Image 1 (spheres, helix red, strand yellow):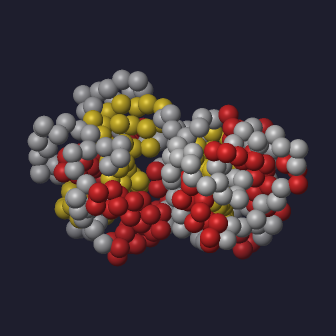
Image 2 (cartoon, helix red, strand yellow):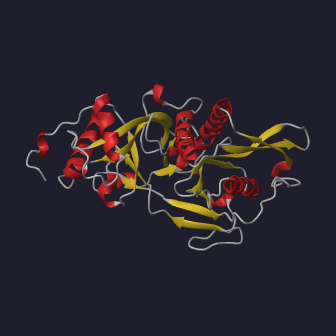
Image 3 (cartoon, one colour):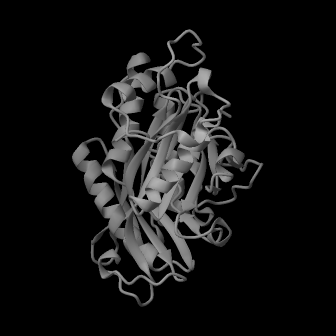
Length: 360
């Protein structure tokens, strides 16, 4: 470690510096690239989140979540947290402690200047580096459904006579426009607010979905699609039901997905389902979309296992679903108003792929 490590400063990058570090970080293994003046760099992005902590008394009424009182839900509030992305040290400056020093300085700024209560990040370098700096690794399971591109999936995947609660499936609506996306996210957030306030967990954290999160993933998939000379027109499906008694319409579930051409997967960004029947239908739609582009898997991060049937960790069932622990994109969460030893009881809810967002 350099002897002057304690004299280093963390400053906001200029547009020119940001452009330079982005160029260097995306040229893997290029040792001939001219070294930038930046010793280490990362991105920070404001994110909306919900937090529930029954062990902490909130006295600022403006912090309380809209429509949720102190009864029942218990100390629920909407906050601004920060996600940390693209942590990078140029090859010629590595192994000097610069990244560690930068993240410690960043934590101080988040707490003292921005009054941040939480921050989170995703790591591909294992758990130890970020754990020693105060972030705690969270759940990182996923269900993988293999897609056999030699087997036809029927177009009539919605052939179900009735569903729970006297509701029958009415139609499938494709989500293809930005207007559709905004409507879906708004409706989803309204349900999330209600569900979060009713959680039994004494302490929980949740990153709210916003339109830019999904658009970032969609633009990435479009770039890879151009390279493969294909066009993406569908970013998910929603299932609508109709009450048998009064013909009222109900949102039964939806998925928003990301075409990962690099790893040959269709990754579900956001998943909402009412029951196992709806889950099965949504996964079948995802498999059909994967087949359209010769993708070999459908992947769901940290699923609610009550909505999936028979998936077992380390083994496959008749529906080809396999529950495993991911080795990459490990999620880390830090609570800046509690000591790490008092923070482990927090539950990160909806830890789905949409939470990954590297650039505004």
